[in-house]
Image 1 (cartoon, rainbow, N blue to C red):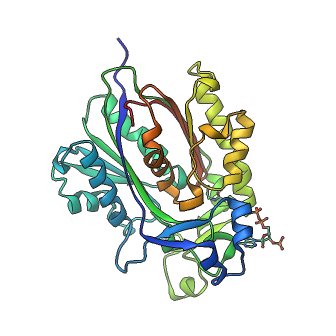
Image 2: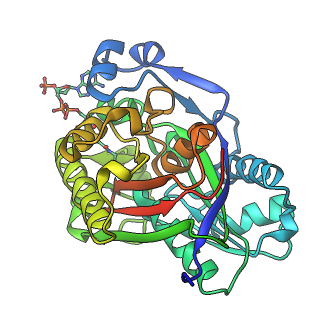
Length: 331
Ligand code: COA
């Protein structure tokens, strides 16, 4: 008898309608479509333009689609975990706002902030509640409205990111599918290379912080790039080897969509074919906590029950890790 495991039993997603192309960015900052595409693999990204709308407004349609696809109602949800660095507000959390907006009257929720690794960390957290029998139906969402924290005069950061949300349902598996293991890592010293300078308790917002443009993403791209490749390669290798799974048996790697060159470097170092690596960075850019569920949303139809899948991510913190699962249904 295998131990009880949490399995992903459905995926929902949402991206805003507005498409910000590299061509349009050429009119905003000193850049070119050619530079952006060759250095990052991104051609366009989605932007949530509607005034007064935030992260929860992208999670709501993603979760509603998820519930419809899996024949559930909002009242079926026990717990909703939302991974994000661009919550609707500093407080309260976004998860409970989503529960209120969709009428998930039996659910409680909370947010997890682990930047681009947020969905991975939230997924493994949610899986524990299902595996130990505490809750039966757990929704894990990853969302970011990166356009709300980007400086559209800084060409080094504004071309990379986009907005979007994805969500999965976790339920107990009654077979050998589900989430098997995860290697999750953190190194707080990485905070120096990727952060927002003001707006938190260390440096609350003032007129000066706004004028100094300190409420935007600050990134030392080259350093992040280097650590991202190493972090993802090391943890994919560790999670596979400690589960005795040869890379050739893995059907899909789902990497965080930070930069196409990071993704191809990871695949090359793992000697893993790119045909089995999920990518959608060309259309969405880096949606931070949204990338992993949005990849599964895009590729769902191609997934088969029993497929071995490795999710891997790297992000601000630094945070990083890899999670191994056996897919639970035919997409
Ligand atoms: N358009 C044109 N030129 C640009 C540019 C843009 N959008 N952004 C930077 N440049 C310029 C730089 O000014 C620099 O010019 P210089 O040589 O005259 O000084 C040159 O391009 C190279 O800049 P550099 O920062 O060294 O480029 P890079 O190859 O490292 O690519 C990133 C920059 C940000 C795309 C890359 O470092 C990266 O993707 N890092 C990881 C980012 C990430 O994944 N973050 C999310 C968290 S996981």
